[in-house]
Image (cartoon, rainbow, N blue to C red; front, side, top):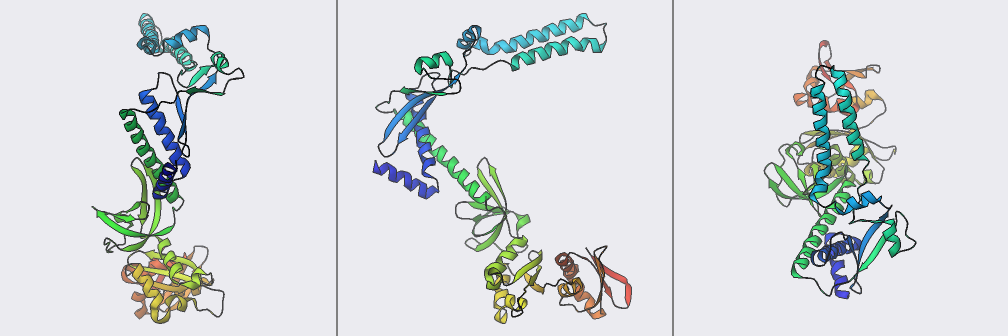
Length: 417
């Protein structure tokens, strides 16, 4: 059966599924088809299929359990009847009726005395119901019956009883098999996609803008599409169909309709990834990104560092005539990027972080984690930035609380945490 084997391999290639998963799907479909046309009550049908020879083996598979007592064995045959199904309910109702009569006759007694028999009765019913062993004749077989089939059978063993293989299946059985195959393949594909992207959670990947559905943008990630919600979009950025963008896989959830992949464009990881891809000195470890502070769509600050005296970390990131940094800005939708040189000395580091403003002096309070910065009057607005953005990003980048004061006018200050 070369054609069948080739067809199975083709499905594996198209759906990205394993060969064993497809084989299990076919066996499940054959089991469903057999039950449809030839199955009998209390048969647990399992089919094994060899795609190379097209040979099919059909079994009724049951687990060996201990023998039931005679009274239980009699009840077993009546389990499917309506009376058997109603019996526990009727027993419970009778118990409740007795309790009701008892509580009425003891009206003069205290509440505590009334509750005692009720609690004892109800707990007894619950305990008896809990201890009942449920014998399932479809999946179980008693030890004595199992030994008639296989003398060495013991409790916990699996007994396989061979069933006759039919010459063919009817139209309805074939339709059932088709539906089972389609459903199982969808489930296997869904699980494969979920596991694949769950491993990539927290990473940055490339995608293509597919379409917009209301406020949500769908991004084609290859095997499936991810969703970009308004909260995770860069403000003012346009998403046109066919545009290739980098996205951060924020969260992967398994929903009834399939995997839901939540994406982000505002993550700091995207900025780091773009630097890693565009600047060879960072990708080969010569330059290290120490910290990142970002307000997506507006401005970012990136602190870089190197232990090599022959490498200029800022110059390497900017590139010749600003070619490298311009590529990064374009990738981020026009977001401004400041490249800062990292320094272990907090005074130097904060001074660099507040650039392009020029700092006169910085007082460090390590106990409070606060830095008081003094600048000239004409540098105050530059140090603070539009809407306090420059001071805010500098504080976030360095991890210090930053107070910006005008030199000679210490009463007025701008504080950033």
